Length: 288
Ligand code: NDP
Image (cartoon, rainbow, N blue to C red; front, side):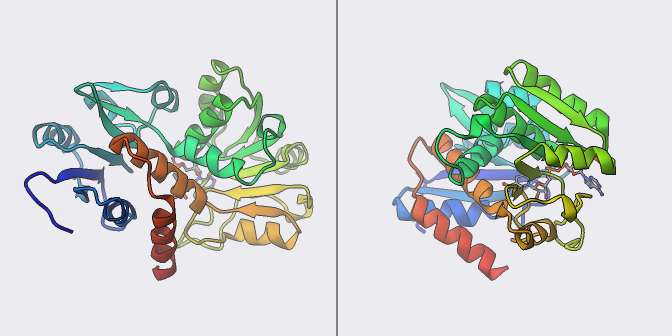
């Protein structure tokens, strides 16, 4: 990589960021496209976010991504955000638009794209869907599913108020949320009414690989399609149990991949080299 005085600089803001895939993913893309650009990781210590965004502006950064714990906190420091970012209430992508620093969120759209690749064309809108969890990933996914035309969503979360709170923005998109209690019989009912089951909780994520949401495997049916947004491990306990019951499964890698492609397209204005990004992502996770 030849860095010159003209090299465009992109970054990820977060804390920590040393483990992030983004620099490897996007630098491989720049190289493949022969773009004079570089992607670096910027660890931002607690309390320094406003200064970091000012630094982005004054140093002429071209944009980039935002990760935990700043996806929500960054919003006041941006000039504008997209409607999707506003409804989700969190930003993962930064880009310039007519001299203004904008934020948007590609997590949900990336999820929907990944999901649609695993469904028959034009069937998503008619699917019955259960969302397990009501954190940041759930918020992004539910907004994007509603934007894609899904009219009903079942949601269950350990904190019911949190589930009720993420269902509010869905109303404006014409989607009705049915919130269930985090309780055995209610979860059983929700499962029986839902073909797609999407785990958005962190239950099962490394290092706690023996955890899973309290879904009873006796209620799993072969017509269920289980999706876990977790990508480390690649196969969570939930997905392993679902597979054993003959269910179709999908892990979080495709969502991670698709949101990265969308972000790259937005901040560079250039079509991402999909094959290179896929290879880089696979190599990264094989190495871990
Ligand atoms: P949040 O902290 O915002 O949300 C976590 C969710 O998990 C909440 O609903 C929380 O419930 C629930 N939860 C956590 N611990 C427990 C528990 N012990 N029992 C029951 N529920 C629990 O995290 P995110 O939404 O940002 O991330 C969630 C997962 O999604 C992570 O594993 C993350 O890696 C993954 N992710 C994957 C992406 C991808 O591209 N594939 C993108 C973004 C996230 P409550 O808060 O009510 O307690």
